[in-house]
Length: 363
Image (cartoon, rainbow, N blue to C red; front, side, top):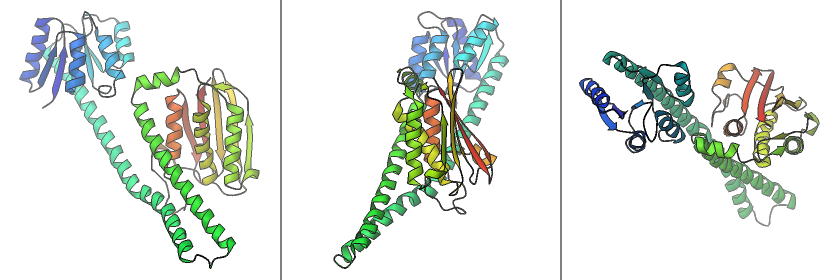
C-alpha cells in the first residue's frame, strides 16, 4: 500500500484529502505546516507528497527546495495545491522540481488521477533505475575480476619466479620481471583509485548542496599548460608522441588543475588505447563566449550509437573481439567530473573510423 504525505494548513481541506485517499486504499501522513511536513518526509519517506503552496513559516516552494537538496528526498514526487492559477506560479514550481499542480477547489477524481499519473511515472523511473543497477552489476561481475586478476597474476607469478630462481637469472631477466611487476602494481593502483573516485563522484552527483559548493569555490585553472602536460605524458606512455597534435588557446576555467588533469588523462588515454600506432590524436581547444570547448579526436575503431548511449562504469564494448586493458570507469569519471562542475561531455563517433569527445567547461 502506497503512503502519501499531505502538507496542508487548512484543517477542512486536509481532512477531505485524507478521507479521499483512505477510501482509495492509500495510507496517509499529515502535517499542518511546511516544517512538520519536511520532517515527516525525511523520516517516513512517503511515496508521494501533496503540498499546499501558500503556508505560514515555510511555504510550498521552501518545502520543495529543501526536499530536492536532500539526497534521501530528492526524487519524491510532489503535487502542489494552490488557490492561484497564474502561469508564473506554475512555472516557478515546475522549475523547482514540482511534478504536478492542482488548483483549489478540485474534484476527487482530479486528485486521484494526478496521483495515479505521478505514481505510475515514478514506477517507470524505479524500474529503469533497477535495470541500470542490474546492468552495472552484470558488467562489474564480467570486467572487474579480469581487471584485478590480470595484474595480480603478473605480480604473483613473476615474484614467485624470482624467489624460486634466485641466483640463476641474469640481471636483464631480473630487471625485466621487476619492471613487469611494477607495471602491474601501477595498473592495480590506478584501478583502485578510479574505483574510489567513481564511488565518491556518484555520492556528490546525488547531493545538490555539494555540487553547489564545488561550483562556487572559485578555484580556476589555466587550460593550456595542464592539458599539454598530461597529453604529452600519456602519449609517451603509449610510445606515440609523434601521433599527438595539440592546438589550444590559453584561458581559465572553473575547475581545479587536479580535476582538469584527471579529465584529460582519462579521455586522452582512451583515444590512444582504442586507436592504432601512426594514426593521429588531435586535441583542439578554444573559447566560445563564456565557455571553453575541448575536442579530443582519434581515428580508431569508433563507437556505435548504441554503445555511446550505454556508456557507463565497468562497461567495455567488444571485449571478446578486442584485447585491451581498462574497467570502463575512465570515461564515466571524466563525464561526471565535467557535469559536477557545470559542464558537458558528449561523444560523436563513426564506427570503425573516428571518435570525437567534446568537453565544454565554464570559464
